[in-house]
Image (cartoon, rainbow, N blue to C red):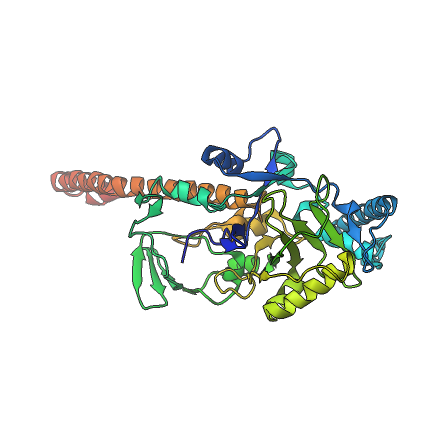
Length: 440
């Protein structure tokens, strides 16, 4: 086992690739992204990702690239339709008469429309509504391309409070390979029961498992979480985001400026749609990455890697011809079927309100909840998890300080009350028949 959760590197094709979080999103704005600051301080190698030309690299099933004018016009219409849909969804929440809500002007039907709709709504870099990450921190994104992995930032932070030697964590307080199955909580503390039968006792617990795990039955709570808490947790959507890596003996795809990303237009929405070559990050790597999401991710996770390879190669041969070489290796992450993750990141539905987010992150007794899903402004992002962790830690420290003050004041109050009672007792003895008045 390891630290990192959904930040996970893996050796593939003599490189270290990121199976989960792979980008530092939100760079170049007026405010500095704290994760970007950590990356700069740690000398983490990154590579700028420019998505702006992806829409002009859309292939049809015959291998032809759609004319730039057609692609630009289709993209413009898709954005307008998406904005209208967003407003429609918001209006439908404010009115009980759905007949007043206008119908969408454009419903994606053709392969190119379906492909663009996919990258607008399913691919995180192109969401239509204003994204706090880009508004606050900037619109640039940088791919992590460092052999030490994205997780290097986590280990650098851990070195500040865990015992390490030669960049390895040797602190026995960090319990890896330990699966928590039950949290038994009361006014006095929390008992943590693990799968191997061990019990750990604590005054407080900070729970940072994903929203997908909270929705599953991996961890039970005794007593059960309150209804308001469970309803908020169950209402939050879980996104599945799968990056499939393919290694080839040589590259056969276009490279150069504006060619890093390309799109496959198919009659089935999201079917091996979004592709990226790794030559910018790792020259000579001969690696392609295709991103699947949600339904397609779950479908691929349930089949063999050989079947996924067959499907991916058919798509590539549609785009680049029958003579391209067979991939020599494939890597398929399985975030949905991983009981410790159950998805990739949280996605609050359109009808979500601030109270829903507050209920998800609100503590229950001595159990505190944190993670990217508890970040109201930055859910779904690494910096969301980072900032949420800081906020949760500060909140718990305030709670501990408050209880400590109460603990110190209790004996002082007791002494004061005792002195008062002694005074009343003396007055009663001295005044005799003034007892009732003294007690009142």
